[in-house]
Length: 300
Image (cartoon, rainbow, N blue to C red; front, side, top):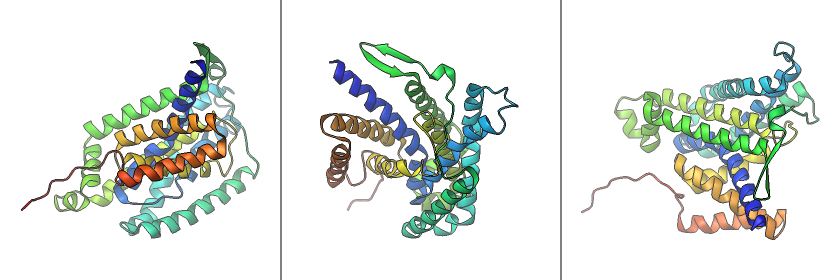
């Protein structure tokens, strides 16, 4: 039972990381059809924010790692959001409904951003000092739960709540939902789809920046930190259903649990292979993902 509970917590922790990484991608990919291979570099941009705050402006914050880390969450959102918005306005806005073109272009952008990070911060990985209140651990029923992982789980819960409230209560959120469901109908109804796309990309990119701040609690960061998450993020979005947050949540925790238990029973490499096989098999029966938009049609 203790082993089962340990793997359950690992799966929950891994699912939270997958969700925080994929949460922004589910909107940009689901609404605009943009295969954004630079999403990992937006995560990287957010990950460097606490490092810069701690090393460059630490004196202004009194040298407090905890204060710098908390300040990095909104700043990381703004930095990654602005970077994504520039990318969308200058390049991707001209490539709506051209997913293969966006794949190639964003892959090139990702390489340029990685090189820029190496030029600015060096080729070696760097460490972000975790706040002291996240260095401990909590034990329940023999299961050791690090405070850093519990913080990521709590952060994901807060983000999901905030995004859900934004989509359901704010006019911008309702416009995003309208364009996701039917872009052509939203356009002829008077909505500026280009403006909605810009809002969506800023939000999705900003969430990637927050994810980058969160992953600094897991290990060192470098120019490749985001690239390690991009494939898993796309798996979560595809399995969950394009543009559907509820499906993304279910898929993230489902894949996290499957990965945790399969790696425990086999090995890391074989567990990853089992994960891919399970996703391929699932898509044979549900090619639109767990949750898809329902449409009405005329029947004769």
